[in-house]
Length: 275
Image (cartoon, rainbow, N blue to C red; front, side, top):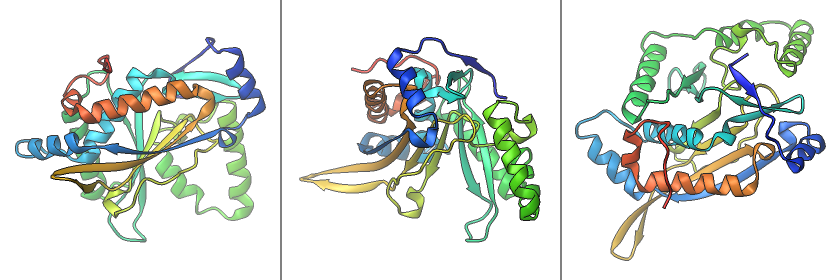
């Protein structure tokens, strides 16, 4: 299992909520949030003159900083107990090529405490090059999925049931955890490049990931003589890890970082004081 710690600072209401809703899939909190990304767009455009950065690099860095600053978002619930990841990992699924039948590879990327938009961008580029240029099919969970999918139903179904039991009891083999997006702090999906807005995506009862964020298309909007840019985020969280006040303050932090994108150049773990 990933390095985690058992949390005991759980208030009574949260514990009862866990008892009432023992499954993550029964506890989905969905937030559809349109955010002003004008400053981020201008920042990335300027940065591209000297650096190889993308909006995905910026959004991933922003999310890493939010998770370091709002640690309850890095928690998960298993067997009615609350745990917190000792590290921050962002996961996503990438296609080997932009074709309907192209293979999909799961990627789990650690965000170190001293990472910033430049080091995170480098990590993402290196992974993309490894998968697409070298046709790297991945290992760990990626390799296991390829093998399991070839089994006939009579074998695959009970094997998957056994793996789900191991997951619930936190004894899943490490080979099935490596590069498994469901064993990460948060899953991120950039669908804006497909000209789609932020959409709802369910969480799963498997693994240790309590949140999924989809990133919609950045759209230009004319407001009088000014040009603004907005992006829609689809955020799904396990509502049992924190209360509504904590979630809303976390969204305010997201907007603050988007308004002040130069903060993405600082260490991911550096404390951010929101005005």
